[in-house]
Length: 124
Image (tube, rainbow, N blue to C red; front, side, top):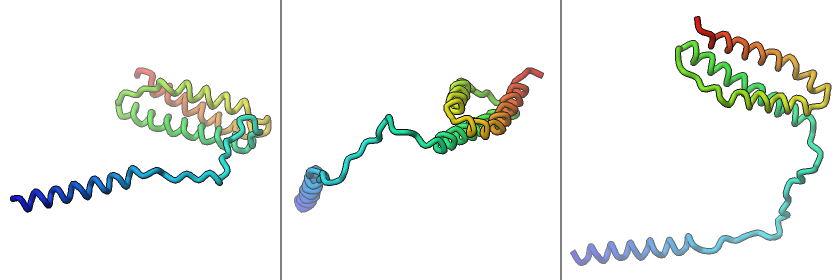
């Protein structure tokens, strides 16, 4: 039995030693440039358009899922949908006119999806 305790004690010592190694200070590199993004730097308009398109696609996916759930007679919580659509509207208005016009067909499709969801929510 005594030999077993020594073995266990030996393992505990190894664990303590390995924990001590884990607590060693972390080396930090100070030569690397530490850049923070400039909040006032001009934003590439194509990036804004891509963000608005991605948001529109995300809303569209949410609407498709909600529609499928409704058609399956499941409850759906659409509490955040209005905020998402509001954000999309704001981002679209921030786009240059040409890019905003280019996004119009996508927004019209999204409106049709919202109207379809509204129809699916109406009692029979």
